[in-house]
Length: 147
Image 1: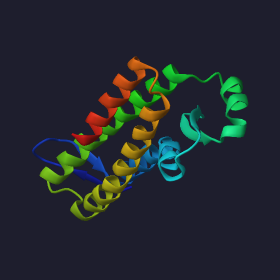
Image 2 (image 1 turned 90 degrees about the horizontal axis):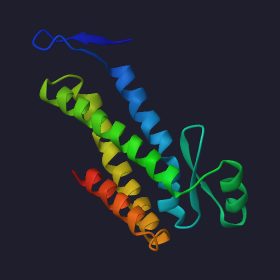
Image 3 (image 1 turned 90 degrees about the vertical axis):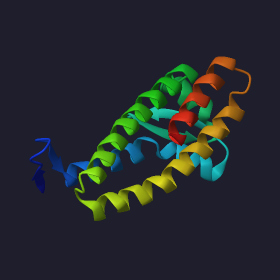
């Protein structure tokens, strides 16, 4: 592993771990990307990752995994909170000029991913348009992505 000890802040940066964390966040939200790409289906959570279930199978999957809107929103809130913390770390790396090339690549990839995540969330808004509380929570998530 590559580590860098910064004298000013005494913080250890591990680029391999930073990359792994970003990949894990992407993997957790893959179902949101698929929803953005296909536009249909319901999101579910299995093994701490989102998946997209297809219409003909979704009621069975949702019952089997005991899924519901509240669990989905709680999962999204937690993952996007992790994403926010991850972005703070990336910003610190940029300010401290640590791993600039790698962090720039990660940021480029993130820009693409956040657009897809936002598209997926906009589809969720439409799917849950009958639930005012869920709509409010999804809008909060979209606002956090835009920050």
